[in-house]
Amino acid sequence: MSTIAVPRVSHETLTQDLEDIFREHSRLVYRTAYSITGSWQDAEDVLQTIFVRLLERERPVEFTRSPGAYLYRAAVNASLNIVQMRKRRNVTDDVELLKVAAPEPGMDDEMRRALLEAIAQLNPRAVEILILHYEHNYSDAEIAKMLGKSRGTIAVTLYRTRARLKKLLRRPE
Amino acid sequence: MNIDAVMKKYLPSAPEERIESGTTRVLNELRRKPYVVRESLAQALAPARGFQFAWPAGIVMAVMLVSALVWRQVPPFSAAKTGGADHHSMAKSSRQQAPDPSKITFPSDVFELASVKMLSPSSEAFKAVTTEETMQAAFTGCPGGFAGRARLDPGRLTIPGLSVLTLVIIAYGHDCTLVEGGPSWARSGEYYEIQALLPPGSPAYTLQDLAKGQAPTLQRMLQNLLAERFRLVLKRELREMPVYALTVANRAKLKLSPAETIPVPANFPPPGFPAPPPLGRGQKFQLMGSEVKIFAHAISMSELVKDLRQAAGRIVVDKTELRNLFDVDLKFTPEITLPTLGTPATSPPPAIPPVPGTSLPGSPTLRLALEEQLGLKLEATKLPIEVLSIEKVERPAEN
Image (cartoon, rainbow over all chains, first blue to last red; front, top):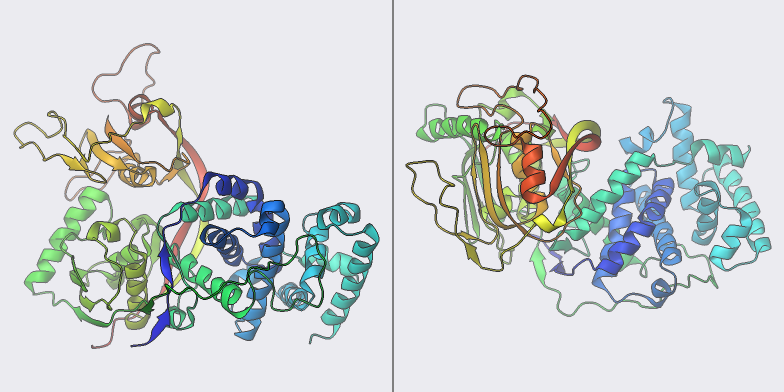
């Protein structure tokens, strides 16, 4: 019989303040995770994992200061980890991934898969900006304000990220 | 290549209804207490690889998968590739978690030893199971409901005989109408006796916990057993279905007695039947027939919706967002004609609308009763509901 480390059954209660934060930001987390992983199961897992951790452990200062910003970053990082792990495990039969908004099978599926894999190879900070821009439709100025950076930095990062994506999609690494 | 166009066309964007159902489901899962948090599941996942996904155990496993990545391999919520210095305002978390000294090592979620035996059609056990299945179908509408003859002793689970369908329903805590597909032998007509030893340190559950789908570790053990011995492969999908949504109309009508036990009203049992003993917390009595009576002490809304499902004639979804426990004293005429032994459930003839201001004779309908007696509202709507399909199942090999 094999043994693995199983820490505990948690008895933490979902507090009202955390539930309020969940209601306010869960859609942002879900949408972000879905865009990066292309899978609604993964999006749910990311959302749940982030909040389970907040229940289980002392809340980070960054979370207390700005819950939305912290949750968004956590969503991006956790989603990227999932995609990278999926690639490492060579999981290629993700049926759901192929179904995501694909109008017809064939080239579109391949392109979508290639795009998600390319995004997973980007710097997480670049992905944050990319998803805010393309999925959440924020302008450079809005992103700059949200992330505490200059508008110029956002524009340059987006430019470089597009170039990197182009390269990755032409010649997958 | 125009990256703008590629992103717009190929970046997955979650549909609104999926976001709604996904976030609601996660919120409900977070409200469940206790929930299991694990740090490594590499071995636990292996036996259940045949499953594409399952709820709720599936999400627990998947969460564990993410947890394993996030909490063990890399710092909390930082991606594996951080890409150099970072002066972001959402600064990286500095709280690297130390290993939990109270961590206990449990065996993975598989039975220590399990024996699966097909019942012979000529055996007494087979006859008992078929009788029980007929009764179950009559009372719950499920051909394979939960079998009460199972036993859960410390360290041992004994199931005298169940169909594969019933095992799936128990293992995944699903409504029987939401598990479809599979060969006919797996749904009814072939029954398996299961004797299983639970590994030391397994959480202590009751049969009630298992019946309610609140025994996650034991359910995962059953899931793994089904995957290993029956080569079961399930697929889950969300399907938009007509359901009833249960909401709150008048919160003041919901009450909870602080007493540990409450007496059952004298008029609850039918004439000639002895009075039932007082009810403890979490216990209930339910009478089904032309009039349905439910009397319960300290139960949750999620339990109540399960009890209403049969009489309502369709799935009832808890949208009350109430997390407390309540007492229930409910009497109503069911929405459908409840079956008696050997007769299927049928829809009633179209109701004649009552004249406003007049009262109907006898018990009120379920909707009226809920509103008048408990301050709850039942609304017909369409919602995405998870359906499990049996993609593949095989008869088990010999022990």
